[in-house]
Structure formats: structure tokens, C-alpha cells
Length: 144
Image 1 (cartoon, one colour):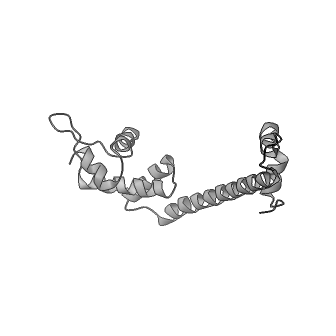
Image 2 (tube, rainbow, N blue to C red):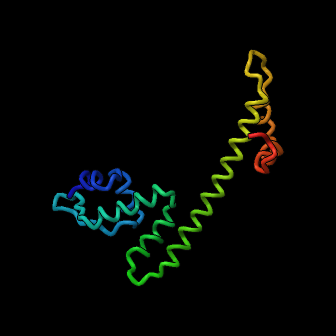
Image 3 (cartoon, rainbow, N blue to C red):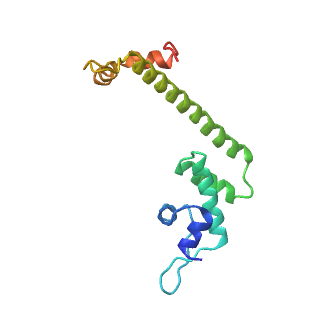
């Protein structure tokens, strides 16, 4: 099948398919006499794997490792679990950071009059880079 059909079946754009191929995430794809890439079902299955891993937020280095484990039938599931749990921990950390950012922004918006006056605590905070406000939000000391 051509790249368009592989893209349709895998829900991965043709541009990303070429990118994954250039990174070595996909095995070398044979070409027709005219030079067009020819994909098979196994490659589409690999593309679906990559797509699902990307949907779960895995980075390309992690995906490369997971692909290697997926292809290795003698793998140890503890290696896969370790990668998944490390990623889940990273997501939890990032979620906490985003919640802290949200609390800080809500606090700053609450402090802003939002009227015709030129003074604005939001801009003051951005201009001053007030880490104390962000640190307070991270510590949960600001109202939600």
C-alpha cells in the first residue's frame, strides 16, 4: 500500500510516517520501481503502536525503547512496567506543576480589578518574575 493508505489506516500523517522512518522507528520500507514507498500491514501495525504511545504522551526515545521491547518476544515485562511507571510519575509531576500555574493565574486574575485602570497585578507579576507567588501556589498557599 502507498503512504496515503498507510496514513489513513494508522491515523498517522504521511509527514510523520516519513519522520518516523528517518528516525529509524520503522524498518526500511521497500520502494516500487517508480520510487514510491510500499507499506505492509506489519508497518501499519507498528505505526498504530507509535500513535498510541504518542497519545499516551511517551517521547520518541521512550517509544524507541518500547518498540524494541515489543519486538523482542524474550523481553521482561518488568522493563515495560518500569518505563510506564516512570512516565506516569513524570505526568503526575507535570500535572502538579500545571495545577500550581493555574492557581497562580487564578490568584493573579482575582487580584486584578479588570477595569479601566492601568495598574494590573498580572502584568506586574510577569514583569517582575515574582517566583514567590509561583512558589506559594505550588505550596498550595493561595486560594483555589
